[in-house]
Length: 93
Ligand SMILES: [Zn+2]
Image (tube, rainbow, N blue to C red):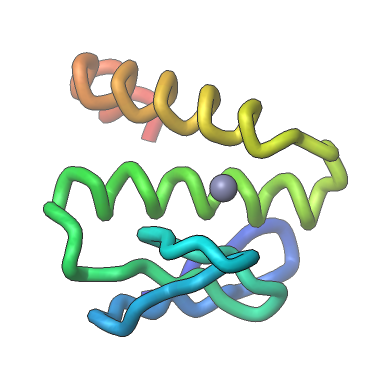
C-alpha cells in the first residue's frame, strides 16, 4: 500500500518486526521514505497508528512543525470523529 501526499508517494510497510524510535518500542514509525506499522497490535490500534503516522508525514512535508502531543491529539480526535461519523466520512471522500 502507498499513500500520496502532495507530490510524494510513500510506501506503507506492515510487518510484525519490532519498531524502535529513540529507544522506545512503538506501534508505528514515519520515516522520510516510508511509513511502518507494526501488525502485532490490535487492528483498531493499527488503524489509529496509521492515521498518526500520516499526520507526522503531513507535518514533515507541509512543515507544520507539530509537537508529538499535537500529533497524538489530532490523530486521536480525527480517528474517533471519523469512526463515529461514517456517513460524514463517506460524504467527504
Ligand atoms: Zn508520533
